[in-house]
Image (cartoon, rainbow, N blue to C red; front, side, top):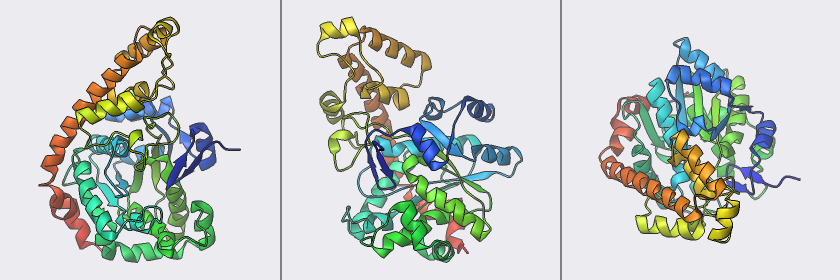
Length: 380
């Protein structure tokens, strides 16, 4: 029996990523593929170098297309149901790096319709509109190219997408949607139609689409690859990330309904310190004496995992931190202090960029080169 549950709307338990690779029909990102990527990009983002982005579909084909000068485009998104935390930002940080390295277009979908339709959320359209704006500021702060990036809300851009979404919807029967997403007789018909809207941007260009996203979104892309053939269009490629562990332990993922599990992008230094000291699960021993003698376990220590995944890019430094923690030389409190310092600096820089983003919203949504092109197009 599986010890974890994973859907686009829910993640529970300790996720077995090797099991997911087999279950979802993915490929592991191996050292050979990383070397090929590095040959093009010259360096590797920490998120893929340490295999936080761990699995893919057709990444080799994307690189083939790039080398043949055919190119590709990037697509990712955000469900605007509340404020963003650090875990939400990870796909955008990696997507921005890919855009920078390959000089390609990026499409970012704000699924305000989906979050309105989700029964557990119980959000109004006014609330999803508000959170769309707030989330867009955080996304822009990552540093995307404003002329090559189009950020759009489904409820605003629906006129341009609807003809394409209809064609997609016509090729998906309820039996398939039910099997892929677990819909029941209680599921509202809006949510049943929604996958066609999430699939639509994968066809915005004739080139192959590469989607960097967390692995829980994979059901949409399996369906996309089935529909693409029926519509005579390109199958999308994917590059999947793991989940940033919640502060409270290495199982599941951070949850907006449990603020103690996450560091929000709006958290100040005092809040960051309190959350990490109070909630960050430790791999250390109960007493200093025991820790010095027996050492800690970095595999289950959330502070170490966060440093390794994102906040300490220097491979030599992270190796030494791990060795010192295992040996007992480095205490849990000292490890937490390292993480706090890194996160506070990260958030200070991010929020400075976020304040500047207020003047750029219209550029990314309407006035940038790609945005202008997209508003002129009705997708057939």
